[in-house]
Length: 67
Image 1: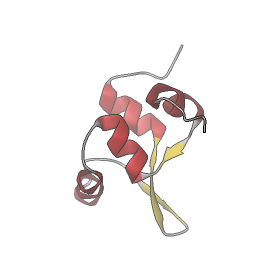
Image 2: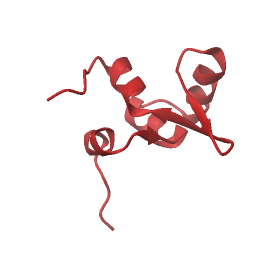
Image 3: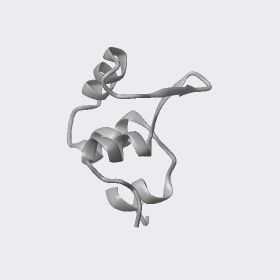
C-alpha cells in the first residue's frame, strides 16, 4: 500500500480527519477534538463528521502553503 507523507497530504488534501491532523501535529487524537471544541483549532462538520481544513493546519505550522 502506498501511503502519503504528511507534507504530501497537506499539499493535495483540502480537509483532514482528526486522526490525520493528530499525526501531522504529533498530538493525541483527543487533543484535536478538545482544540476544536475550545475553538483553538478551526474545524467544520461535513455530514456530521469533524474535518479540519489543511490551510488551518498550515497556519498552525507557520506555513503559507504557497510555493
